[in-house]
Image (tube, rainbow, N blue to C red; front, side, top):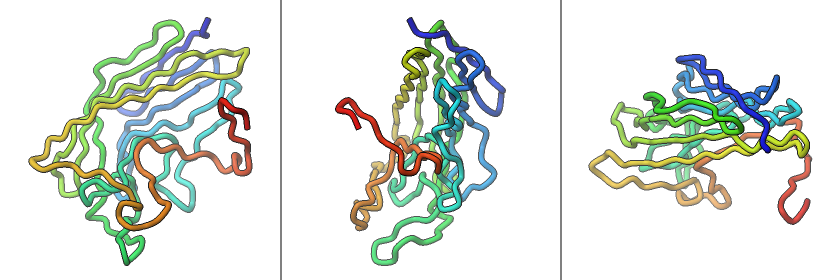
Length: 205
């Protein structure tokens, strides 16, 4: 049986999920102060049941990397990733007018039921000029905490609705011409102390 989880909501700031005395996740939806980093909610820190942090936040090389967050590096010539934008033939350029944001509009549900803690959030993706492009319904759930196995599970699901009069074109630096740079979507930034660590999957190391 899963260990019980609890939820604490600091209104206007964050939602925290804990197992006993260990905060497993802080989901921060308060707007960031720096628009160039593409303001949007993020989960940081994420921790193991033993309390070890497994996310990084605003590292020196990429200030817009914040824990676990949904992104879109290339969306109809807007950047919902944050930071510099890749332009084919010119490389990465600082183009603030391309950087959009994801606005928190409210929660439809926040709560915990025994071994599961979850919330459903409403967001709007806003282009740099203020035009609303996307309505999003996002559900994040923590569950299956097993102290003996030392693990727990996190589910992140989303539904996007285009509210523009034009199609939305999702891409990445690779679709824009840079090889081996297909980053976009749900993005996890690990902490520096995981460098050189082992990745374990169903088949082992």
